[in-house]
Image (cartoon, rainbow, N blue to C red):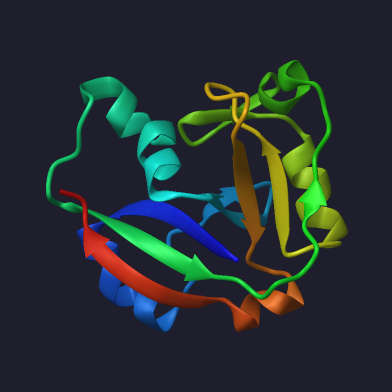
Length: 141
């Protein structure tokens, strides 16, 4: 499975040694927000929604994840996003429950802005995270 993230170019070197570098922390749990395509990574990024573009200092990271079952989060859209802010995104407490239970490497949930699309939370403390590889990085153009 391939998932995509957008990061600042200053993080690219660290990612090559530590795929979890730049993770979001929530209640002592660490995770990465990721998307199933380059287009969704761009459209869902908070910076893009503010300026409708990216400076060349941003890079796309393509993560290769082992083909394992992912947890499908079936909460209503209101519950997915309403409870608290994590970084620039408001996500529900389901994130902490998913990470704390450590039942899967990846959780799939409905996009707030693009309901037919999915977003992903990658649990960097799951044992299978050691099999995650950075397949490619490239500048956003």
